[in-house]
Image (tube, rainbow, N blue to C red):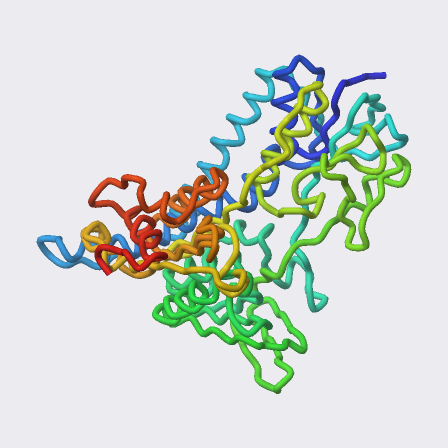
Amino acid sequence: MDSFDLVVLGGGPGGYSAALRAAGAGLKVAVVEKDLVGGACLNRGCVPAKAWIAGAETVDHAAHINQVAESPFEFTPSFSKIAAREKKIVAQFRKALSSLLKKKDVEVIKGEGAFTAPDRITAAGREIAFKHALIATGTAPARLFGLSADQALDTNSIFDMDEPPASMIIIGAGVVGCEFACVFARLGVRVTMLEMMPSILPRMDGEVARLMERELKKLKVEVITGANIKGVEAKPTEATAVLENGAEVVAEKVFLSVGRSFPTGALGLEKAGVKTRENGSVETDPDYRTSSPNIFAVGDVAGRFLLAYTAYREGAFVADLIAGKSPDRNFGPVPMSIFTIPEIGAVGVTQEDAPPGAKVGSFMFRGLARAHATGEIAGFVKIIADGETDLVLGAHMIGPRSTDMIHIAAVAMKAGMTARQLGETLFAHPTLAEAVLEAAHDVHGQALHK
């Protein structure tokens, strides 16, 4: 019987980060993966989606180029080339990850793993013993309205499209729905978004969500909020969503972007003494340890944060713990990067959830010379600070490079900086990041260019 210091179920961000860190500490490690290393993030999520978004952004770039071109030209993006480029990028990074695991002597076992005891699993016809195990099997797209995978697109199947439809219903106007709406609208698809909440991006700062909705409507995306969907009928060439008020929305395709499910039923968790919550996610303590002392769970399957980068950190944390180290439990604030067009960044409390007496400063990108130079003037940066201590409690931004610049605020928050200290930091000129500087100054009514 094979035996390992650590067996990881799932080769996504949480799983492979733990495997690499543990192997680097000299542990004997195996990763059991039933599909492709890299998990949903690399193969069916973050990475391919960003490649598509980069392709869609070329539509805006072409409009900017036309302003300085010798002769006007008409730009038509090629979906087949966008898709081919995306697949090349994904394959390149999957190959690099496989090589890295091999270099670190991590054994990758192809197959579906299941526990048979608190210290045993079976995978690919092998019985494997372990000192420690890590569950990092991720989540799956939620299915609604009885629609099968053949009837409705989801984040697993959308990247298999050969060509975009003429029209599309996107059910759910959260992060994923808005990102794909920005892509398909720029590719000429007539998009209708259905969101049951009163606004799109319901967990984001309200002002950010309202500006994003205006940007979508500029692209002729029809946004229907407060949409209670009675049912969806999907045929090979047509989908119809019926709302409770009797209205019908018809399009060629329907795309479900309404959350994730936790398919842990086939993992044999009961044989390992691992408890799950009602939704199927795995229960853990603050150190990601399950009810079985030598078994841990990280990433989406643990149900804390459904984010690749928190899974990376959690996986590395558990590996260090198993290796006998004392890793830092303070991960700090969790930033959000949303790759809509324009981009969105968020960290900490929203203005709506800020404590009484909180101070808010903001600055529009249109006030920056750099934004006008690049032709990206839509959006703003907002800084929220405590009314008494002046500590930065949150930051929210929508506009160019917001997915990168949000980390300025995240670092400031982890360092315990005040809005005044952030405003006293030197920012180069002319840059887009100056919007963060000006917003920090505006907390005290001292923005120079407002």
